[in-house]
Length: 117
Image (cartoon, rainbow, N blue to C red; front, side):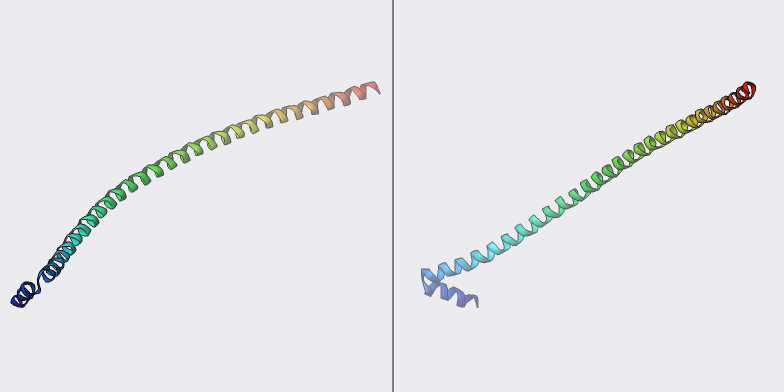
C-alpha cells in the first residue's frame, strides 16, 4: 500500500506531491484542532468551577445580608409595637383618669344642683 502511494506521488508529478502534502497537512491540522478544542474545554471547565465557587460565596453573602436586614427590620418592628403598646396603655390611663374626673364633676354638679333646689 505504501509503495503504491509512493509510486503515485513519484509518477504523478508535482500535483500528486502537492495533493499528498495537502492530505498530510489536513490530518495534522485536524489533530492540532482536536488538541486545541480539548485544551479550550478544559479551560472552560476550570473557569466554570471557579465561577461556581464564587457564585456560592456571593449567594451566601447575599443570604447573610438579607438575614441581617430581616433581623434589623424585625427589631425595629418589635420596638415600634412595644412603644405603641406603651402609648396605648398610657392613653388608657389618661382616659380612665379623665373619666373618673368627669364622674366626680358630674356628682359635684348634681350635689350643687340639689343644694340649690
